[in-house]
Length: 218
Image (tube, rainbow, N blue to C red; front, top):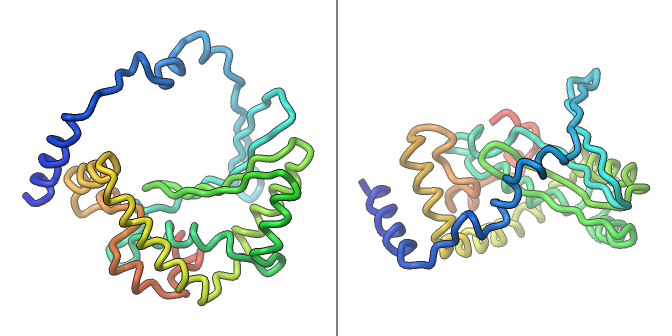
């Protein structure tokens, strides 16, 4: 009942805001059949390791490479909810080959954009770079994913960062109402939990719980 009341309250607030119609949004343009037909085809290949690679050929001087991992709140438990998002925050804090400063300088010198995000079903790490630097981008991504230091000091610093992010999200009604909808629709399921996790988990998550092996087993 508490969730239903929160949904009703947020719905009342949102209904008083101007509504943006689909016809006037960028999403409408993406539904144009001619535009869909002219989009480049996606080729799926599977490596001997079982890793699936999706490739699209586009004209231009830039490229985007990324890694999509089945790790998110859907695969977590009440005890480690928020671990995948926490790990994402730790990914750019240095590896066994690169310090955090060295990583930042290397990315800047290459004119590269490196980022990541976590959803309920996936965690994504990606880089946008010049097409001749795809090899370097893949090396950086693999180094981050396989050899991140995950130092205890970084874990402690990121707690505060994530709590502040949580406070910011809680003030955005559009974000919160979707969390409440998931909570109501997927009760007693990983899909009903939030991506960031409860604050109690953020404050108690240990260094060993933030390791990729622990997150992927969740």
